[in-house]
Length: 261
Image 1: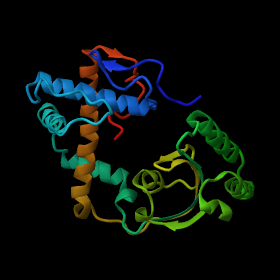
Image 2: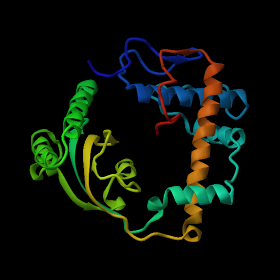
Image 3: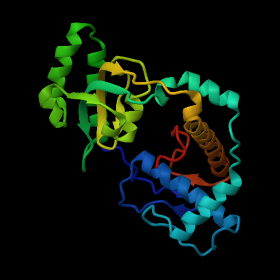
């Protein structure tokens, strides 16, 4: 059975989030719920006309989008991090701020395509990951290559899943986030999610590149900490809005991140 939400029409304060025949994943449904919570609050705060039409396809009007941006700007106070906090973050994530970092990796792609049974696909991917992590030493190499050849939906499967040496520019951002800025080598302990599907990934070698000074990357460090603070503040704000709303048919507690897009 597909991982969709079609039996019950989800709603926020009586405003339906989808049609009866529309199939949405839990993350897509939560995204719509959060957007609708913000749209309704923007109306309440006088930032959006009360006759703004609720979206029927999950896409808010241009006016609603601008009103939500204004709402968040005035509702979320994001202080600048202290230099001490910036230095702590930099010391703990130096690899992230290195230049020229490379990773030699291989993967097994379980592609998500139209009509894919996502639950069954995830089960196959997790079973493969568990099988490969249960073997160590030289046994992993042969088993990984054979699994990639048999299961991977990527052309690299014919080469045992080998992706060669990669830099961040070679990868989708969500894939690069899991590969770069870390130190672990071997089969990664969890599936890597990307726009293409689910990946079992093995890091074969790492080249850390050149370390940068704190001063040279301080701007990037500041942005990273502000973004982290923003996500925390947004999650708390959405929690307050959800707590005061009539939420039907969607589990807003199951998401680690308040907005998945």
